[in-house]
Amino acid sequence: MEYRIALLKGDGIGPEIIDETVKCLDAVSEKFGHSFAYEELLIGGAAIDETGEPLPKATIDACLASDAVLMGAVGGPKWDTIDPAIRPEVGLLGIRKALGTFVNIRPAKLYAPLADACPLKPERIGEGLDLVVCRELTGDVYFGRKWRDEDGTGHDDMNYTIPEIERIARWGYALARQRRNHVTCIDKANVLETSRVWRETFERIASEYPDVRTDYLYVDNAAMQLVLNPGQFDVIVTGNLFGDILSDEASCITGSIGMLPSASLGDTSLGLYEPIHGSAPDIAGQNKANPIATILSAAMMLRYSFGLSAEADAVEAAVSAVLDAGHRTGDIAKPGETILTCSEMGNLIASAI
Ligand code: NAD
Image (tube, rainbow, N blue to C red; front, side, top):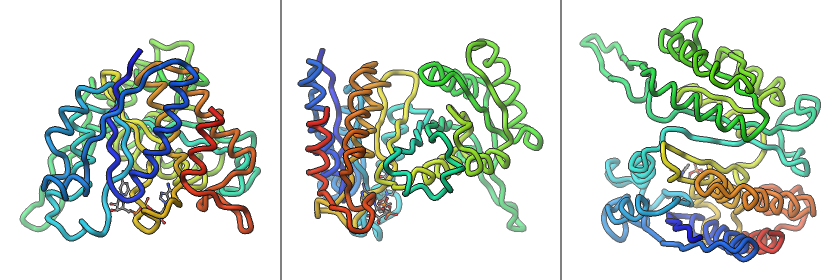
């Protein structure tokens, strides 16, 4: 079967990390007999330079016609001083919206050979760390009415509709069924009306999934539990604001930003996959970037957009094997360790696949 993949390389290290990821996808296609058809499209600063806008309509149309979108990163000092309305980041928000994505999934997994990079004491990590934050993307205080009174008082209206909560809850349960059958719903139902609606809705949806264990935590306690005992979590489901904060907290537990993938998904299988890091202008064009976050994002694409679980497992196993063998890019190397280039790391993972 042929899968059409829109490639948005973007700026800075974007082209380098996407090129290494394509090598790995080609290795998957060779091993499993699939065909991946790539189409390169403009986004971010690269698009501004060529067309004057960060997200050309041709990019949106081609992404909508594809089976999945794989993105590098956008932005850089060159475009920092231009009109905010057409900054590279506008392209990023625009493509998430155009694809109708409403859930952002960020796995936070600590690879055993990188345990030293974890900022927590080993006894806090215990048997390991492997959780996923499912953050709602379209509602909450970010999208409510914003206004100021005459006396300068600021307001942000926080709201959630019941259908918005139902669909993210179902997403979380479906994900938990592919993992360890455990959902933690995080809210602030002791104080916020939005959260009380969130929790009531969640409890109703939870009854549809008796095989999945559901825990409920207030967000302040959840922030504490993430650093005290992160191994207790499997799938965390939460709103836009709490998810923004908790997903960053969860990510940093795993060490390097160069290791962390993400997926943004909606009602269809068409998703957007990207590393959580930015365009790293300080190392761009030097073949120094760690491509693993993007390669793991491609593994998420295989799993969630194409339903190719064995293929996704093969990519993740190849990453583990290369790390187990002691291979490191600069961001994850300890002093004195040999440092690989971005393309050497990509080659090793592709051959491990
Ligand atoms: P950044 O994530 O680009 O870089 C932060 C630090 O992490 C840098 O020292 C960088 O070298 C390092 N780093 C990041 N990714 C790495 C990788 N794969 N391998 C090795 N080291 C890596 O964040 P920043 O410096 O705050 O932002 C740079 C630009 O990226 C800005 O223009 C910002 O707006 C943009 N940005 C884009 C996205 C995105 O496209 N999703 C996200 C965040 C920031």
